[in-house]
Image (tube, helix red, strand yellow):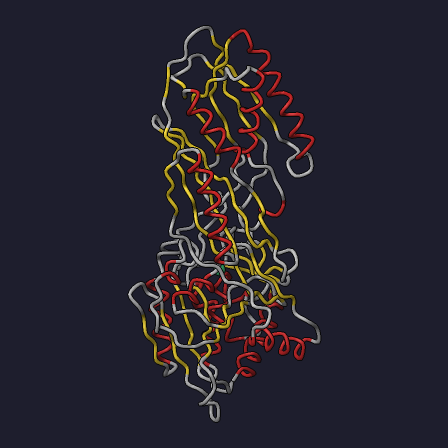
Length: 488
Ligand SMILES: [Zn+2]
């Protein structure tokens, strides 16, 4: 029972609000009810709230006595949550609230996501807005929608919707860490037009498959150096082509499935003259050994599988084959540069993500990320140039801006000082190589918003394993109230 789970937990009002919003279904794009609840709650507190066209809500809390001249501070949270459940659990995320329980130092849901990401942020912000004993400057409590499936709320904030030039995002997942940056990103899609010719003569047709790779998220896992199935397929095809003295015919190529995932699998249908079939299979086997040697640590199960196929459809002509293999080979993949300011932060990267074949062309989807806008554009331009040399049509997506770490940020300095005073140690300062709302909001309101992000410790967010550490919620909320007082 939710009531029982939070009994005696502190801060009492944070857990009270967490229980309240947990009772309201609030999966991404189903946020109407929780937004109504926030507006109603703000009204009951005597606070003014406004809502924009997409649904984002700002609640204004005026300055405390003597703090009227203090700068506006934006406290930002997202109201939606990821809806995932274990296979054996019956739960209707559109109709039912989240049921949770206590497990030692954790609150955990009963087989579903908990929504502590970002529900603890929402609950903490409501508790802070309610608390009349806290003396601080004017607060703009910003509740955004649909962070998890499109960053829709952040992407549609109108200039002027918030006015503060200091922002604290309450949506990170490690107590004791201050986040000061994230990556921006965009996709670059290229389609290489191809001409086809019938496959004639005595040929062996085969499906060459790359299997057994780990893959991962193209942002947060890119520094691990895992193999990319599309790149390994390309190397294998080039080796087979060389072993058959350029006689390999390429029928189709497929690989990957999501723009933000490192591809785990890729495959190609090829035809080689029957007389050199053994050379081709030997080349593939050699590639398997080469990959095992190079990626044995990151991808110990890497495999090159060759299967005979019955009939060949018309295959790419030699010029088209050269263009496609050339582009795939030349496309960069992986970390382009590490940050010089933040240890272990990937600053710029690119992912060769998806490969598809249609009758008239081969399409390659790639995605680029960087915490520095100019470097994001640089790597996207480099990728597009590879495509253009191969005669491809290039389609870049709109993308989203990053949040460039600013080591001399005033709010960061304040944030470190407050943490030190409160807990007697330095907080860690980090940035992540994936998207957050901060960069987008900053960009939408015209830039220059000094921002940090922090939160309680949440383990396994976005999965039914999600749980929030009870003691970290108390530390996080205490820190939040202290930093809000101290910037006034
Ligand atoms: Zn979140």
